[in-house]
Image 1 (cartoon, rainbow, N blue to C red):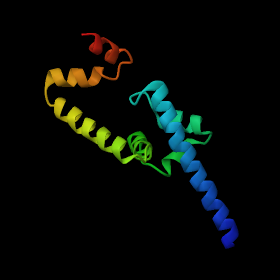
Image 2 (image 1 turned 180 degrees about the horizontal axis):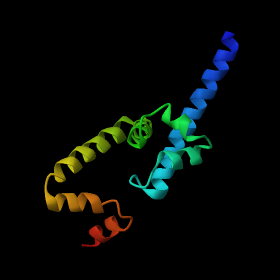
Image 3 (image 1 turned 90 degrees about the vertical axis):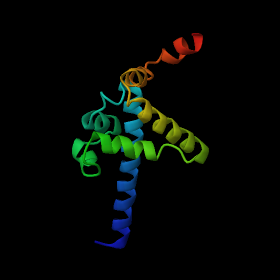
Length: 115
C-alpha cells in the first residue's frame, strides 16, 4: 500500500470518527443519554454499527468521547466539571438523586426559577 493511499484512508477514518462524534451529540440531544444506542448513533452518522464499535466498546464510551471533544473553551470545561462534581456529590442523598435526575427535564429550570 502506498503512503498516498494510506494518507487518504487515515483522512477518511478521521472524517468518519468526527461524523460519529457529531452524530452522538445530535442523538443525545434528541433522545437523551438513556435512549441513545450504538445503532442510533450509526444511523445518524450514516455508517454501520461495526464502524462505531471498532472505535468504542460501548455507548457510554462514545458519549464520553463526544463529551470530551465538545468544547475547547477552558472556562466552559472548568464550570462543567465543577457542576458534574457537585451533581455527583448531590446524588449521594436520596432527595439529591431525585433532584439530579429531574434537572434534565426541559421545563425544570423554568419551574425552579419561578419558585
